[in-house]
Length: 466
Ligand code: 5AD
Ligand code: SF4
Image (cartoon, rainbow, N blue to C red; front, top):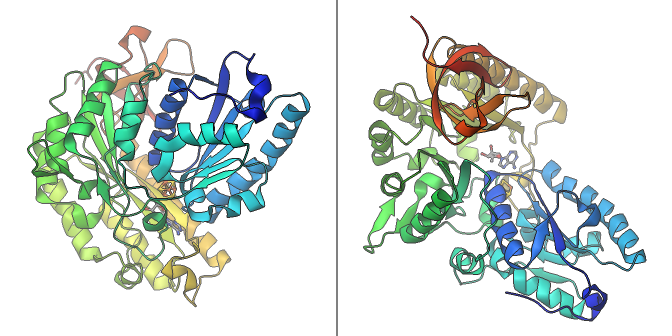
């Protein structure tokens, strides 16, 4: 869809290519969403620029999950005001847009706090981006769009994006499920992303095929509760994540499949069995529990206890002995005691993670936990965070070291920093550095691992000599 320049931008008629800068904060779903917005902008005739300095359009795709993430956006917007004023003084304009979860949560408050902002739109209205830009260009007025419209956003974007950007990556994200109905007491997602929704199978398959045609070899299916996926199949029968993965693994050119993030309550037998039987499904499972205390899990409204989680891990390990686990942990949740925290450390010891993320609890406005009377003092939370991170780091190092002397299949993704070096990923999601020809990018190679760095492995082509 093309738009006509309105009065505010009349002097731009003579300009040639418009440029857009998109900056992403937060989770992988935001990375995916930014990619879809970039596709829409290509269709609209915008060329991508990697700096806001000379951009006609700047979009911040924001994250509201923790306070820190949201505040970063406001400091960027302050910088944009200066850029925008400087451009205006030179007779050029800049549209500043705030998208994503901060946009959804704060709406018009953003325009009040940051007057440089022209567009505010939430994650459910990305498909309306062309209309929003056109309307703003016509009227020059700020627009706030935070509805949850009835139309299918994905369908609308599929139709819009006739001019897909050239494929650049070997590995791509594909959102299959969005939103959440679980209402953990700390979490903003049910409010910012809305109710749980699964895309239909045929729509996902079509997108996966398009990715494969653009040279993508690995697809990571995304969803806030991806293993709760229950999309309608072409035969009008509801399909679970295991069924979807089976279908996607039949697409020519797709070598690897992954999915994230899973909820322990939705880790069903069919999905575990899919790991055991589908060689394209990688042995890596991000399965956050958040903490190791039953009392806190209850206060978090997680809907399961520690034992259920450990039973699930055991079941997965029985089916897939080399499964690598990852998780998320929140420390300093309201009322968390030393005993509760020790239980978290002990759970981490029991599971043995290949990697994990840990966060200080951040009270989010509107969530039940934010009103809890017993917030944990910051110095206590800081100390707990440092202890949990040391433990996780030690486990990650142990896991990485356990790969030395083994041969792992690595999907080579891009050139490394050093000349002649390539970087890929192991089945367990570890970055692997290796010397090899650029023509091998996009292929799977057996790499003999002979060294580990802080967060990565390195090795050489071939198999380990016994
Ligand atoms: N404070 C800190 N961490 C949070 N997360 C979600 N909400 C909060 C919060 N209010 C973490 C959880 C989740 C990950 C995406 O972010 O660990 O799994
Ligand atoms: Fe941030 Fe969660 Fe929104 Fe992703 S879904 S952008 S992590 S708040």
